[in-house]
Length: 271
Image (cartoon, rainbow, N blue to C red; front, top):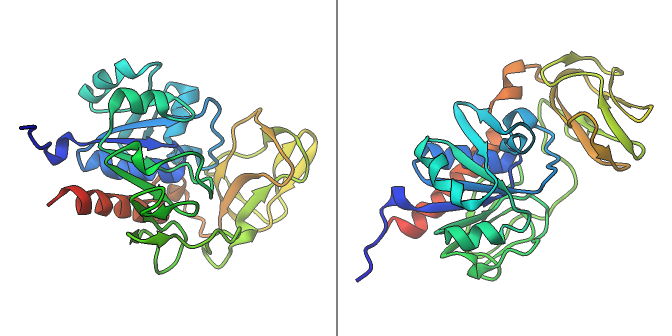
């Protein structure tokens, strides 16, 4: 008879390495699950200081005491776990890593607002974050990602709230706190994450076209230097509350979603 795995032996594969995926990974790592993450070759995380995807460029990335390490092939995963770190690989569709790991849990945390190929048969428990997933159809459980009363809620039947295209309100501002390009070009930051800025300041340029702050606050997120951007693309995030420390810590939203994923895992396996 096959012996049942202990909770601390469960393997969780997280697709994505951005802010929310990293918040989920941080939560599950501290809860003593075996975590592995997969990403695309050139991630475009805006909140880079709290995104494990930065390890793709830098080799490693630490967020609130948890470190992700870039590896080149799945056979290196176990050695990273032994050091107490989170392995992350370039594996855009996640298939190579999933085939090797045979995870107990797969979390689609790409936050693409649609399903990019995740199937309910990918693991014993498949969790989808946000729009694009239907519990009982293409995933087992959905976790709500929209700010509000339902944020982080475990959904056992049906879907998350639809994408409105408008970010959640922070400090009385919603759409105004985002920085977007007005033209295609190469992105050049003029400010850094953590800088205090004022309404009207030039925060970055796309080629020579300025990207101007609509509100005052702290630069909470900003794309990397030299990234090719498209017109209308989100390239930065201003926090009007002006708390510099919030730029370098997991957000309330990511923590709530991480808690929802943890609840889903316990719901499925802690019986």
